[in-house]
Amino acid sequence: MVKLAQKSGASERVLLSIFKNVFKMHREGGFDGTTMGFSFTILGSGSGGNCAYLESSSVRLLIDAGFSGRQITERLKGIGRDVSQIDAILLTHEHADHIAGLKVLCQRHQIPLFCNRLTREALAVELPNFAGWKIFSTGETFTLGDLVIDSFSLPHDASDPVGFVIHAGPQTIAFITDLGYVTKLVLERVKGVTLMVLETNHDVNLLQNDTIRPWSVKQRILSRHGHLSNDAAADALPHLVSSSLERLYLAHLSRDCNNPALAHRTIQKKLDHLSASHIDVSVAEQHKPAPTVHW
Ligand SMILES: [Zn+2]
Ligand SMILES: [Zn+2]
Image (cartoon, rainbow, N blue to C red):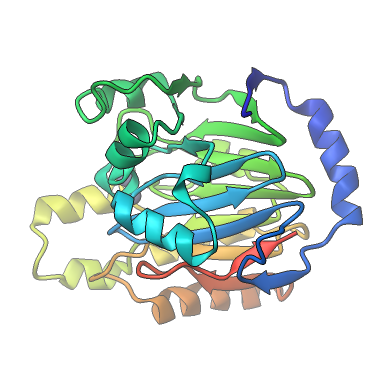
């Protein structure tokens, strides 16, 4: 069973850094149903919904649940997993594109939900009879089975939005989406991760020329508590890139004000400039899961 325990995480990190040199991610593809170790799949990402799946030998975890319960169930089925096997959901914040499936997953399936207190308060109406709240304090490190999870504050217009760094054996995965800009705290927390899910929400020109969104919405997206543009993500790369970083997922793309090729081009150009050819860049898609990574 999943256990929550408060930890400093320091001793685990020492151990994990030793493991880092021993293990390597070795293949991509679907699940074979007998996975030992760890697997990670972005089930979908974009301004229309966000959900990722992380599996260890002791925990099956969703990070956000921003598709309908049915969609999440189907996408899990697509990688050979059943929604009834999910041990917990880790929530970044309460916006609709991160919580759309919570009613079904939490109320019906009674899957425990890890979030901070203000996010819980914001969700009180959404989940009135739910008893599986697992509350952490922003900035805290806690364990979930064999995963060690760091939480940290992000600048975004929600109650108490957070990013995560999840230590999963030899790999560490950073989730940094839904942020208006890259803070010093973020840079400090994601130092040395091996996988990064990074927001490239919009192209500033496409957003400014967009004829659908009212001015106020554009201002919100562009603000310090809005979303990260392709250029802003690229500008942060000199501080985010390290020799440890193996894989970079570009995530949370706007449907109308960005496109995968443009986001990829902007980021790859910057990585080339930084001579960071060791980093594998891919764009997480809205409508289908990314290939599963095993290690
Ligand atoms: Zn948001
Ligand atoms: Zn979002």
